[in-house]
Length: 104
Image (cartoon, rainbow, N blue to C red; front, side, top):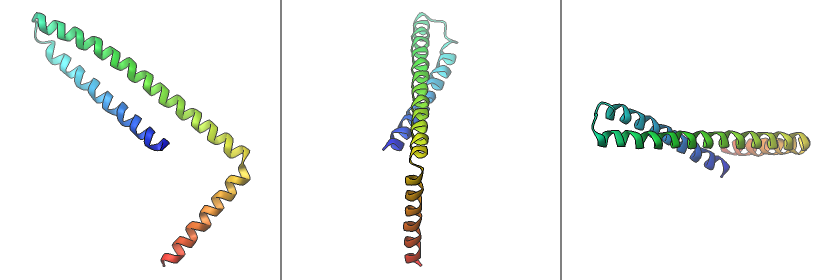
């Protein structure tokens, strides 16, 4: 479930970056028009683009922070429960071995 949430966040960040890039391209296109409505649209796009970039920066920082915390907690658990972790790894290895052996 945590992996699914991480993948969803990564997809959201990637989609958001794409929207920002498209908006910047649109702003370049609109900048050639000198009408009052075009200027108002450019100003609105510029404000929204700045807000989107700030939000994306915050989300990326949050994802990085949470990843670091998860890595630290995992590392602490493995160090505190080294023999339990080794036993679990051996058990999983044996189970995989039995499953592979039965397939042949």
